[in-house]
Image 1 (spheres, rainbow, N blue to C red):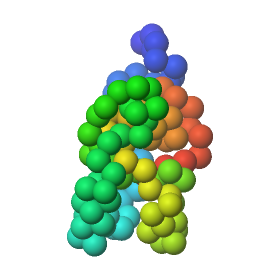
Image 2 (image 1 turned 120 degrees about the vertical axis):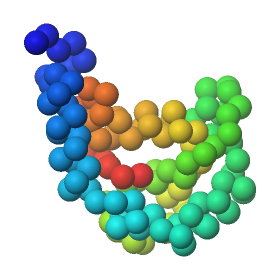
Image 3 (image 1 turned 90 degrees about the vertical axis):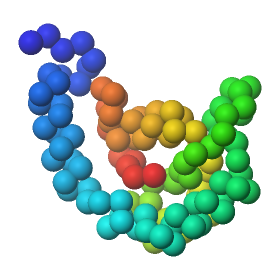
Image 4 (image 1 turned 135 degrees about the vertical axis):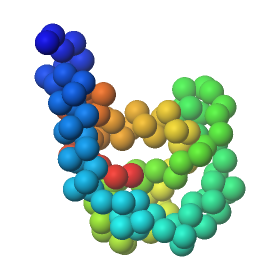
Length: 114
């Protein structure tokens, strides 16, 4: 089968690789995204309601995600450091995460989880 997205994988194999990665990654709660995080996230988004990436491009879009600028990879100090947080809309966050994690046919840059 011809694969055009640069990943080298057909849909079936790409889904299998993603499933295996998700299983290794663990649940959101096991990665620290619990009720304490949800309260902190909601407070941060009230204080920072606009997506910083959209604003850089001259657009106004509501932020719905608190992104870890530097992926924390389980480091609790980095996870809770507000100076490492930024407000993003979901499309901007998905784009950043895909770039870091190698999604959408992008090569993996060593980031992850953010």
